Image (tube, rainbow, N blue to C red):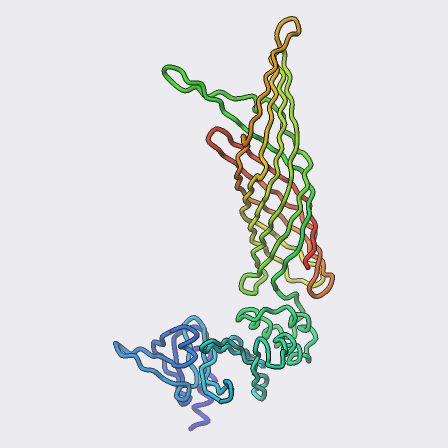
Length: 383
C-alpha cells in the first residue's frame, strides 16, 4: 500500500505543482488547501494553512513540501546552519537532475545545489576559505564545459542561478545574460528645426507672427558623441534595460538673404543625452543581433544662439542690428530612439558592437519649439 501511494503521488503530483492550486504534503498525501504566502523569511520556517477562519501552522518536520498557485514550491530539507543541523523549508528554484534551492534566515541568504539526489551542498556567496561562489559553481559543473564561461558571469540571485542550473542540466551552449558596462562613441547626422513665434500686442488682440528663424533651410549636419553605458538583464532573460550617458556638441550657422534683408544665425549647443532603451538580444553565439527602442532625454548644458539681422536701405546703406539670444533653444528635450546592431565576442566577458540608431527629440518653451532628428552610427566596447 505504501508503494502504491508513492506511485500515485509521483504520477499525479505534477498536476498540482504546476500552478493549479495551493497544496501541502504530509506523509505522501497531497492536501489541496489555502496556503498562506508570508514571504521568504517566514516561509522558510513554517507552513501556514487557512481553513475557514482558522490558521494552522506546520513545521518542516511535519510537512515535506508545499506550494502555491503561482508555481512557487518549498521543500523540507535538513541543512547545516553555523555549528548545528536544522530542518527548514527551502524554496525550490529549479527541479531537475541537478536542482537549486534558496534559503533565507535572519541575516542570511544562501543557495543549495542537489545533484542526482546524492550530493547536497551549500552555495554561499563566499566561503570562510574565501572561495567565491563562481569558483564552486565551476567545480560542481565541470562535467559540462558549455557552461564554464557562464559560471563566471552568473549573478548571485534567484533568476540568474536558476537559469544557469537549467542550462547546466541541458548542457546548453548559449550566451549568458549578465550585467554589462562600457564606452560608446558615435558619428552621424543631425537636423535641427527651430521655430520661434513673436507676439505683437494691439488694442484688440495679440498677433502671432513667424520670426526670422523660419527663413532658414535646415539641413543634416555632422555630429559626434561619446559616452558610457550600462546594460542590465531583465530577470535573467534576453531582454535588458540599456541606459547611456552621452556627451555631444552642435555648432552651426545658417543664413538667409533677400532684397531687403540679410539674416545670419549661429547656434552653439553642448548636450548631455540619456536614452533608456528596452533591448532584445538574439541569443546566438559569437555574434548577436540586437534591437533597441525607448525614450531619450537631453539637457543642453551650454545653450547659446546669436542672430545677426541686416536691414538693407537705399543707396547701399544698411542698418545693422545684432541680437544675442541666450537659451532661445529649449534647455530640455524629450523624444525617442530606435536602432539595431551587432555584438561580437572578444572573450567570455568582453565584446564590441556596431549600431545604427535614429533619434527624434522635441523641445518646447513658452515661445519656442524645436525638432531635432539624428541618424547615428556608433561603436563601443563592453568591458
